[in-house]
Image (tube, rainbow over all chains, first blue to last red; front, side):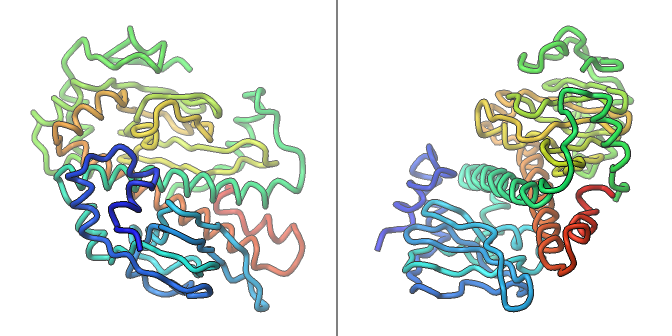
Length: 176
Length: 194
């Protein structure tokens, strides 16, 4: 089994992190092997961990009723996942299932929180990794949503600001 | 794309990729506006002044495009007043994937990923006041352990996590209904703004 540090070195979000802060971050994670079909967490449950996939494959599945699920994302090695619920302290929005025998680096909620709050170099690099991972996750989620909404009607011409802003004004959500 | 007014750096507004420099000291009004944000609640006027000294104060009217979808930007924006939204093209109605208000940051991913292609078009929907940083400056401050940069990162993380959550909720609501596509679109109101 690989060490936490070796897995983090292969993770794109930790690329270029010097040895010292990487060692600090690694000390807060633990490599856990999981068999195929192992459920890492269930949709709707309280979050207590985030993971980085070292080896194998994990799916994020959303229950859509009648015993069916939608695969929101398929995680490959190097992916950080399960972090959204730790960040917003809300229930899991998906069930995470290993679809192959996998090695995951596990960060408990306390370790994750400690690293986020750390004001040393380790915390700085950890926050950088989280921002990059969130950017990728947001893009993937928005693209997924776009695919769902694309099917009906014609999109507005993007090069016509007048039409664009009219539709924007008409559809603007209320201020929260 | 031109700002309604720019009190600190008219000479560098024209190109968003220019490094930000500040030719004049921040005004008391600007310092007060920033002190009103949660991010700066535990800072001093001197902290805020030094923060503004490394940034560019910009003001825009409503319905101004700040960032074109598909463009690259090396800037990070802090919304001091007003509201900006980010939309993705290609859907019949605007798909809102960013909704930033006072105290929110925009462009955080560009901090750590050079030449990132913007996946959204960012527009003002109210008159806004923004503070813009070039990412090089923020990186240098971060490397020196600036507490302000850590706070900006915390804020960026919270903002991004909320947007992911909103998208996932909208996906769930869109996929769970049983009755046809009209129902699917209706359930997307939160993000489509209907």
